[in-house]
Image (cartoon, rainbow, N blue to C red; front, top):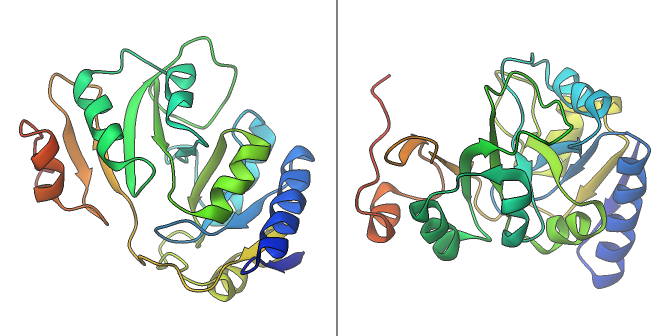
Length: 216
């Protein structure tokens, strides 16, 4: 287990390289994002994805989202992307918006029991993007044990995940401290599944037809 400070250009470059090397070996890493800290691994390595879920104490019924380095990566991972989704991407990527899309059926990956969908996001964080530029898509979920609050500092992630993670990238406290807002764009109309750092009002300013979350 290794922790790298990424507050300088040198630290960010070194941390991104070490994290990418760990990902290539099939290991699990923790990285900062614009919402909360995330724990992740190579999205195309089923064993690595299983280790992410195990680190969190989570089963296959809760598959991790996938972080991407560019908006253009979307069409390689998702299919039948509606115009509403593209308008949301133009407005809020990179940023705290996760879109649940129909996954490309040809992809050889196993994120868990996804029902043919994939949750995608491009984060607005220099360290996260530096890592993603080297690794490509990563399966990343909040860096915490299931049932506990998401980590907003690297120390919180270390305390919860410990030796299950090979490399921790420390960029200080999370700038938002809130999880991303999740919107499902697989239906006739886009629907909010979880409100987070983006409000319903901001989303509807771009896509007025956006449906509210279902009552719990």
